[in-house]
Amino acid sequence: MPSVEHIRDMGTNNRAENSHQLTRERERRRRHFKSPGEAQWFLSTFSVINNHFRPGLHLLKKVHYREVMGRRFADWRDICALEAA
Image (cartoon, rainbow, N blue to C red; front, side):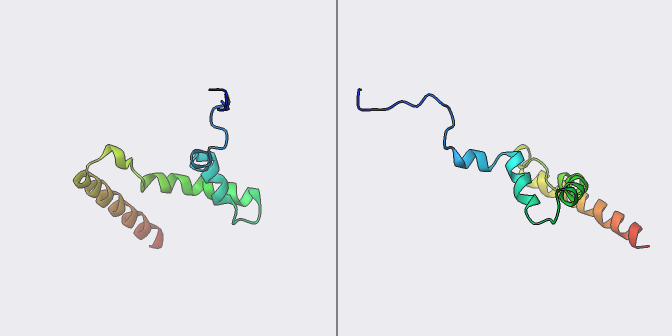
């Protein structure tokens, strides 16, 4: 087909996939901080806590997910109670 132009570069203008990349999500989170150092400090600390509350949903059934999250929130309540005391 002579009228069709074929683009060889894979992923050119693929906005949907680029915006969901892990590095792009981190950049979006950093926007609201005053300095890069402040953002880096917060995100490095928060990522440990964040990973605790975001299990792989695609790996768990609904019942197991609820059990896992129940245990994780119970752990979190225990930790918060220790810090408050």
